[in-house]
Image 1 (cartoon, rainbow, N blue to C red):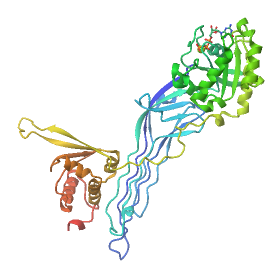
Image 2 (cartoon, rainbow, N blue to C red):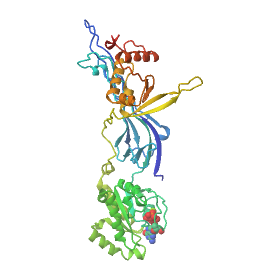
Image 3 (cartoon, rainbow, N blue to C red):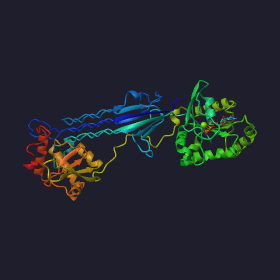
Image 4 (tube, protein in one colour):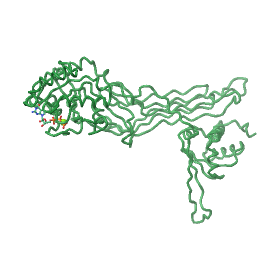
Length: 480
Ligand SMILES: Nc1nc2c(ncn2[C@@H]2O[C@H](COP(=O)(O)OP(=O)(O)OP(=O)(O)O)[C@@H](O)[C@H]2O)c(=O)[nH]1
Ligand SMILES: [Mg+2]
């Protein structure tokens, strides 16, 4: 039985719909007010835990997942519809990580309970239409935004099967041996500590019930600090609903071992101590163990509060006492009720729709690159390209609809108030040099008068072959 499964998929949330520029047409009214609607929101992409799936094999056939785009706004104040969210179904126990995430980067999500979902990529916001830009001063704006691009990313999925029961204990206690007798799993068993290095899983069918057991590698002192791969295993233990704590009866100090393990659980996560535990005192077939059973049992119940009905002498090797142990485990699971309710929720799991992170437009970095233009005939050295990098300004540029002169003006104003213009001037930018912001490249001009901006906008429209009809009131009041 394979307990790990991985897949790599591409995810793209929908882009927001574009805002619209439109004006009302009314009888007897020459210029109606603005009536361009807003674009709809692009669809989000979620991962959803589906208990009908048991592997990541569905992702062999499909690798790309794209949510729909928001609908564009229209005239008569019609806002475009929001796109539907896309649900990517994954089996329970799936961990989602950003591709190439560093080992210290927490996963994007861990999906444990049926129906649980986590947002993987947020859809873009819809662009505003010109109705939304109407102000007391500008009652007839000719401006609209483009929809925001939806997020896109590659993610790695990893399936770690969620076990009902975690078998824990010190190294060499007989955990793997127990797993091999209660399930069909054939883990490596050997008479030395740390035989098991990754959790083994096995399915136990008894009394017409199915229970998934995980044999967790041996825990030792310091596990909560990550010693002996402790973190990895303790995280695994967290997902189990019931723990079977195997005590090595042949150990010099079985009760001390028992305490040490419980302390590690508690130090890793205090909640782990509250997880139901069934104690299996193992290797009673040997005199070393069997002779001390009553003594140990007495200590565990009287000094450590282990309930007698949760304490079992067993021999994993001969099978003695194992059936009673498994029945007790089943009873506790039944008491806990259906699996859906009992897994602890993880802080990483988002169920509400998070707002897109607010980004500041005045947080940016300017860098300069010399571009050599000294070809065969060139003698004037080179020119420079100025890169302005910042999530806020890049997103703003992406949403700017360059077809509208007023949008260009707005962009110009933002460059001014954000301090980007002064930063560029401080780096000595000269007329004619290139400035790149995200996917947008424009040519710097020292003359930023309305007439100059208007002229360059007209040139740009011509270069891009955009029909200016309907894109601006003509000629624009600014430049009349
Ligand atoms: N006599 C006897 N030996 C046992 C019993 N259970 C396990 N053993 C032996 O104890 C040794 C360790 O068994 P494992 O099942 O590998 O122990 P583990 O807890 O999985 O050990 P790690 O994976 O190293 O942490 C092996 O030599 C087993 O044969 C038992 O009930 N009686
Ligand atoms: Mg083992």
